[in-house]
Image 1 (cartoon, rainbow, N blue to C red):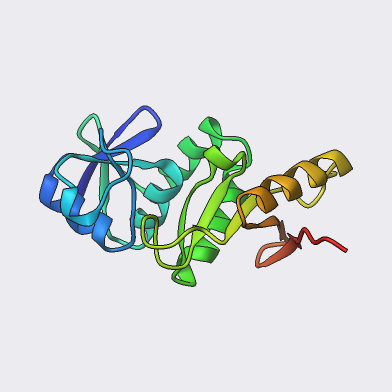
Image 2: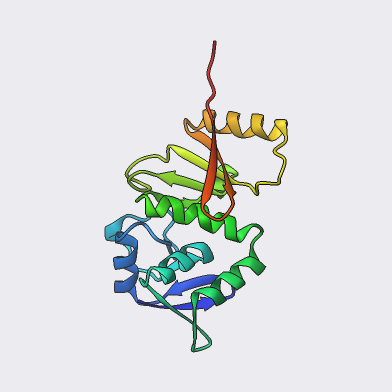
Length: 178
């Protein structure tokens, strides 16, 4: 599937390709459709850089910018310039996608990702993920805020901390009443 990089977004202009890619794992967002259903996709699909890199590495899309082909290293370099902690966020995204979860931006929940078992509109995301570097300190107030937020929307909040080249530590918060 052909796509085009415009600033820090990737657009799939062909509607049939948009429908196909969205149906293969809820990739991207159809332009102008806030809560898309499979049968309603009739617009180009917009992908963020993390999704685009994953799809490019898995040979599901090709990307051009000003008619020049972009490879995965070039896209990763663009991502590093555009987003804080891009490499670690991509590692977490890839980890969950490779385990067949649907992973979307979690901005509406104040975190990096919302993770679904089946997909948005089919089930609610059981997990909210915030990615940290291994050398970052997580303030106690942030732990409290994230835990309360997750409890209020009936989700588990997880801190994802990549360690070394291949390891990821996960710390899950559970809110309970005595």
